[in-house]
Length: 231
Length: 238
Picture 1 (tube, chains in turn purple, yellow):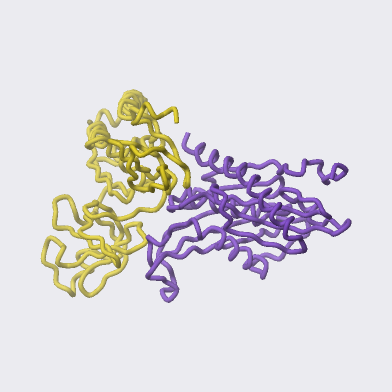
Picture 2 (cartoon, helix red, strand yellow; picture 1 turned 135 degrees about the vertical axis):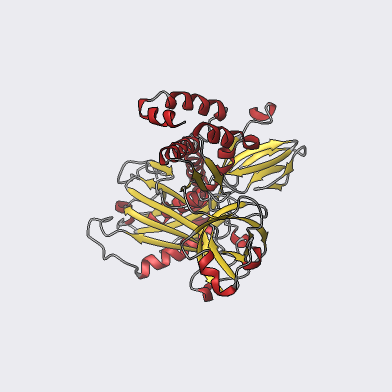
């Protein structure tokens, strides 16, 4: 443990420099930016507005629709623009991560659109996206039970680290890298967890506790950014 | 909780944040009681009046309420009325029966056509639609003047306490101003300069909407603006 060194010299429980800003898209009802180091996500919220086409309307409750998009210049190799299997999956994941807190049951037949754009990517894009989306939803005045903060935990060989970067995601020594993105409300309730790789049950529990602790810092920053916009 | 002494102190809260704790307080709009705490359910300014805690929204789309005066655009014409876009998720419906004069059903477009702006009052909000009425003074189609759109959440600041702010702007600019609760503001004066001046004043209010003692501030602003050389011709006309 003592000999383990992260590629960028961070401590095991240290995140990259985080930045958050609210109200950056003037035409949206609510918007926010969130960044982990070089990963920058912009979220814009439109609505509640009438759902079109009409057959998608839900007369019982409103619908939350998230759209995740990685811009073609966000990575070193240009990625093909437009929807892909990956972006649709992350959009859906974001929806599921946020829906436990968003109270749109008060707005039947409507839709709240969340557009997340990744303008620069260096791993953990979905976490930055969820953080930005939660702030943008709050900024749009959507009733919410709580905020959602997201962070990724990485298992590099056998060591757990907070907030994986691209270099760490490609870790090849020993057992290799496992990326575990997680989202929590500020009360510590888990709203989303993904795991791609191998991990022992005990170590996963440890990882969840680590993420829960780390999201508190994210939450504080989100709160600070929301409060600052008014002054 | 050091702000507790000053109960009228407003502070910005985020969703999930505990506003006040203890059994002395009641949860109002935008809040809920969880255990012993009053928790904010939306982003806005928290306020406590007579032990009732509520959150005043700072942003978001307009939510229609009964009795609101709104300004909207005629969207569509049906066989017995007009559909109006008032900036809310649902369209608002104005029935011919709610128009002050008798209109034959074949002549609906002669009275108000698609694209026209109109002032109306919300008669009823039900689950499916918003019903409007025009059978009151000051309501009807807009023929002249200028219309601007502001954030609907800033409308209370533009009106001020018991209309103090809007009456001051009306007096100083000599314009007739109608503020729709949905954020549309209609200004009509005898000259376009006066209308633009009123617009400038309203824009100033929306920008400074978080300053306390705003009515005093705007009084000073009018003093300053009136002495500006570009305002000379406006003064003359007055």
